[in-house]
Length: 127
Image (cartoon, rainbow, N blue to C red; front, side, top):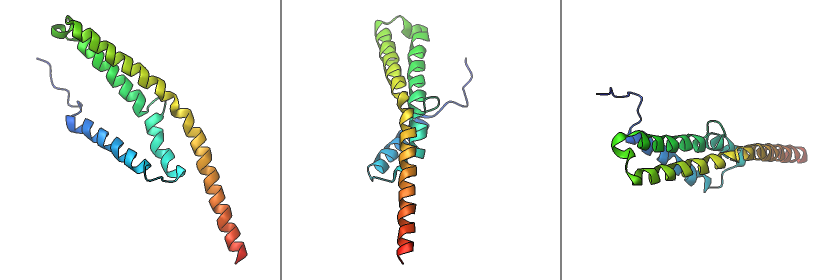
């Protein structure tokens, strides 16, 4: 009998991740400043460690898991499921290319910050 993996996530762990993404979505709907959003997007779209990459890896491993189970591997449906997980993993991996947008957003945030500082300075000069 295999020993339990003490690092195995719980369903609550996975649900917490989904709730965090839901909170991020709600926060973005409030139209926060770009400078406040960029640090939140980085872990989402980073091409090496982002959520999209990690979810892609988890989906791919789910497919492999299904194929490696001897009692499931012979079923035709499992091969279809594996294909679905594999396709979804590839699709998400393509979207991980969004990390280039962070550079654009960082530049925009810096410009907005400079503009805000300049307008404050102008206001102080007028007093």
